Length: 501
Image 1: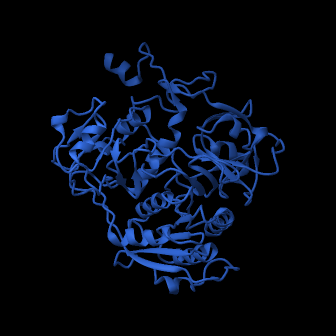
Image 2: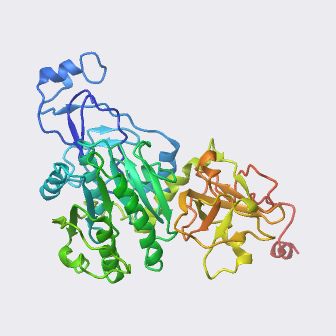
């Protein structure tokens, strides 16, 4: 930013602000840049006097800010573009005022995201609160919870040094891949979609860690419907951790799940009573999917036997739900599974390097235990983990005791925090080792002593884009059966031999 000020999704950029990364693709509502106070021509000319950006005769009227835009050309962008070409699909016939290969800037785009006065007023009242704030954001699916969460966090960052973000939506997580409940420390504006974040996981969160550091527990599925007790137990651990860290200068924002019917109402009630929020922002869509009135919800029986009672009555604000302005007539809407795939793809991208796959870690079966579905026999545990996404867990008990011939299978306990995800590319039964690809650094990986099977799918990459696990460019070529198949032109199939006779 050279001069003026610019507002984007609740965050204000000034000339003194550090550069920020902004990403606005077709999977989510387009971000809009807004200014409020126009600058005089003399101010603009002075700001550009020693820069090569614009000539003096190119400056028009109604200039509110002058900023420098640099498009980001990185391998992740290329991968996302190859996987989902419609991320860069146009949503308008209007001509952009600035157009680069990966960047277009439009003036007055009607389908750009605009925050309504009701949302802005509600968040403003939260920012002016003097006591430590614990904000819960509720509403059904596709009501705008993620958008309101980002806007709330960005506005709070303008008057607080950091924000604690508690994610309970395991199907559409904001900062981490799906299947996790997380407590994250946010120190920079959230101006990227979920697949643009680079989370770092730690066993215990503190206020001194870097931006986007998370304390996490793995659920392993994208819905809590079949694991409600486990889900509430792990959410409760993070709520307690967040309440301990929350203070006047570090508020807490909770993103609730979109399951608002049946047992989802009971889970909402337990989560809100456990959090003891100071503010509840409830998004309404005017449909049967809306939650019951919040005062009634707070007294609804939950699934916890010892669900706490509210100590103080929170400030409850009902707000209109936000419908995405994406034009589905020109861009096919992104489904929930596609957004989860994008998030996993962005998370696992670091395992690809310099046109090949990063060599896998070799993990002995004696160094880790396994958590597998109850329906799987224990002697098949290693084969269950093969070719799957596994959660990398850490227990306080240290390294596991060596098993017999098979990998040791254990039951999950509350103390097992998640330090990231990995892909088991292969296993060697003779050597009793796993071959694991993961973006987790080696120092953190040394803390891992449990692999948990998840229901997440290994992210798919179009053929020819990059080398794919199980098919191309394996560093450990001695692993039987994991390389690409080579064709033998001198050997004919049976039908080919018959045809020549």
